[in-house]
Amino acid sequence: MASTREYPIRVLVAKPGLDGHDRGARVIVRVLRDAGMEVIYTGLFQTPEMIVRAALDEDVDVVGLSILSGAHLALIPDIARGLQEAGLGDVLVVAGGTIPDADASSLRESGVSAVFGPGTPLDDIISFIESNAPVRELK
Amino acid sequence: MSARSLETLLAHFKDGDRGALARLLSVVENNPELAPRVISSIYERTGRAQIIGITGPPGGGKSTLVNVLINALRTSGNTVGVLAVDPSSSFSGGATLGDRIRMLERWEDPGVYIRSLATRGQLGGLSAAIHDATHVLDAYGFDVILVETVGVGQAEVDVSRVVQTVILLQVPGLGDSVQTIKAGVLEIADILAVNKSDVPGADALVIDLRHMLRLAAHADWTPPIVRVVATTGDGVPDIIERISDHQRYLRETGAGTVRASQRARDDVLQGARRQLDRQLALRVRDPELDDLIESVAARRLSPADAVEEVLLRVRQGELPVA
Image (cartoon, rainbow over all chains, first blue to last red; front, top):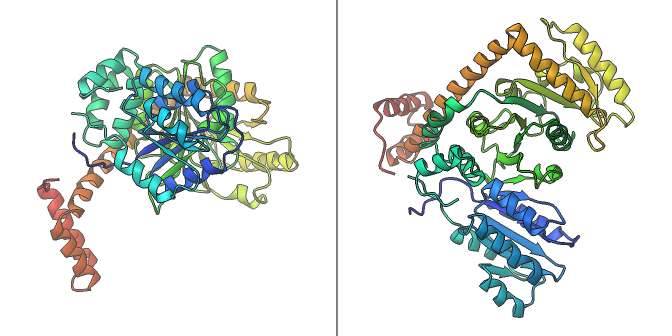
């Protein structure tokens, strides 16, 4: 696979579960846009099934999950599994929000590539996505 | 969708695989080399869908109207594909695609497919890949394709060359009656929808639009004015009926054939322009071309002479090894 990308990275930023706080998610939408990515925002209160459907239909390279409710261990593994089952195993999954370090490692095992806690520099998030988003090549 | 070759992907698409549909839309959007092969392979399956455009000012309620139109169309048994266009930043090239948020009501319904597209520098309110994207949805078998433009101002009329029926959304409060006697987007409306018609100013807007229509020269279709409240769905049955009226008018009067030719002309010319742009883009990487541009910047060469040089290279067709 060639590693040159000639089109913008597509990212789905999603708010899973019963969590009404999306200031952080909106900041991420904006900075990823300003980094040249095409960002689809789902809005609040998304079930894992809704997020998987949006990722499939929008053919995104990256799914970013913002979660502040504490339900990350209940919701995120379901989303990661749903993506696998939908044939989207190559999609880069990252998470952010109030996720304790102790939980981050178990999320990684379920298929999340990075967990960005509070205070993570925005540039770190951008460069992680830029270097890890899959490049889909067709012949 | 992890197909490695275009042939496999096309085969999955023709079997009705949803992931293949999504990936194929990415191919026509991202890959100007493969896009023509996709269209050649699927074109014989197209020509069945009704293609409806929704345009209007930013915040006018286009996405919300699409949401209730989806519902109404599904209730009458139609499958619906949506192409929702939002603007790319002219600085970063990135885009926030936020139309989908308003269209979640039928998220689980396999008969509904929603795809967000960015303009990627294309002016006119749509994406350069819009014709190809409608072909892909048409070939997949959707009965109705809704094309939502970016929020438009006064001159984004491209949607009229892509769809069969244009719904132009207007909302009260955006200016006085002088706005309605200007040219521009009003000229492309097949159906005028006055959204937010429950707020003050809606009556005056309807009257202004009616006057404007009376002065305009219409052959045999006068755009109806429909009052709607997209958030509640009020007036939506009316719009659906007007869409059917307009589609019937296109079928029965020959106006449809004229429109189809206009669409095909725009499709071909856009495609040719895209390929020429691509050739130019490949040239721009050429270090020799950088020298040329430097010479223009330093005023050793006129821009006109540089253009001659560039065109010469495009004609010679020597593509640099990328």
